[in-house]
Length: 87
Image 1 (cartoon, helix red, strand yellow):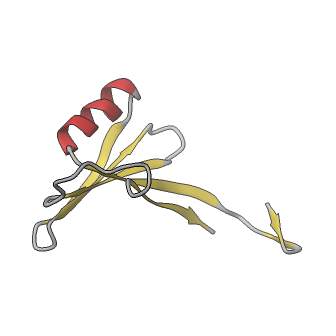
Image 2 (image 1 turned 135 degrees about the horizontal axis):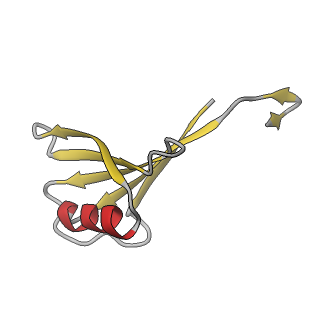
C-alpha cells in the first residue's frame, strides 16, 4: 500500500468491542460466526477482562472488552472501542 509517496506494509490486527454480557457475547461470536477464543486476559484489580477471538485463517481478531461494573447497556455511540493496525 502506498501512502504519501511511501510504500507501507500494513495489516489489520483486531477490532475491539465493549460487551455487557461476556458469556452471551462469546456464545454469539463462537456459534454464529464460527470464531474461536485465542487468548484471554483478566485484570480484576482494574475490573475488566479482554477476550480475543479469531477465525484462525488470516489472524484477524475480535477483541471483546468486558468491564465488570458496567450496569447500563452500551449503545451505538460507546460500544465500539478501537481498531488496531500493524505497520
